[in-house]
Length: 185
Image (cartoon, rainbow, N blue to C red; front, side):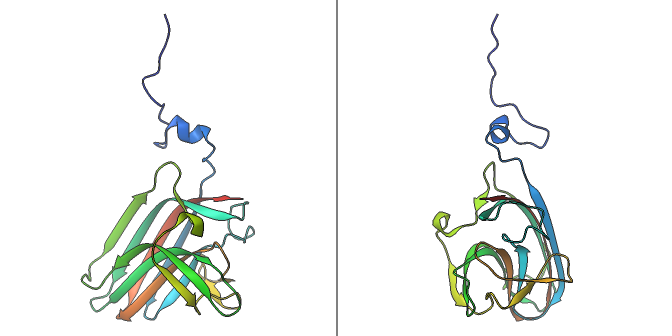
């Protein structure tokens, strides 16, 4: 009698055995929570080159596997919450490649997004992206630091870094994001 599997085996965390076999198992998590944002501001979610403060070891780029994003605006908040990555960062500016955008122009209620990007995730690098780019933004410079997940330290912008951008028009907002990611050489 021979045994023929009917499909991929499913792991405890819901990933298929194919996912495990291809090596995408070294997932790290980061959580950022910022309250009462009342101006345009950017936050460092993953500093790809920083292996001291972030738990990853590879410094090429990040793959986002999943995220939980919570946006809690006050009654007068209008603006957008964007997640993306940086390229062409130097001492005067950098380019923000937008991957996710939540427009809060028509809503003042709590938004919670739980996104799972499958077995490979989203490659956060420019040769895998086609979409909006905020070019030459002075928010992202090697000599301008962005607040990080721990709430007390800030970190310089660099190529490949994953950032959260709050573009505010009015009011204030609380934003919380938890990201599951891995880094690639």
